[in-house]
Image 1 (tube, rainbow over the protein chains, first blue to last red):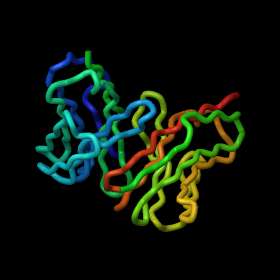
Image 2 (cartoon, each protein chain N blue to C red):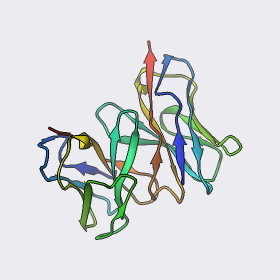
Image 3 (spheres, each protein chain N blue to C red):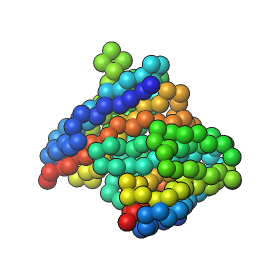
Image 4 (cartoon, one colour):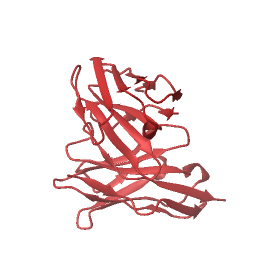
Length: 110
Length: 114
């Protein structure tokens, strides 16, 4: 089974901090995605990547950036964390038969 | 542009009763459609997907969904609810396939009463 691992399950950061959320998949998937999940809003796409060093903006990229230096790792970066970025962040990867999601990182910005 | 509408935020059924979770989509091209389930404190898991083959799609855990183009719907059903079905369910649409970006609905929480 494909595994998508998000490095932290819970994270608490201060306003203004630079925050890195890490995601690693172990099945050589080319496509990787970052979503945030908020109650009543479902999942919204932040950024995605179809290949190493490639990235594309999703629906809500403001305040975020990403990095994909290796195929298996896709990092989400909050350049200067704000309280409105408190959310559940979900990473996913796919090779054509549907997404495999990580367990999520619940980020709280105080 | 594509979008998904899941009406209501919460559905409650009795154990053994029919489960019906509604999903309507909007897409300018023939869509790929998905249902995902999220159990508490877990990531999302694929239940089933429609990729332009059979219109009635069977998934895991006894769930199925029917693609109805005329109604732009992809409702999820299960004949008999089980307590373990309590979770949040998301409908999603893609324009170009299962490996491309998905647009999700807002999700619906299913509760199952004993």
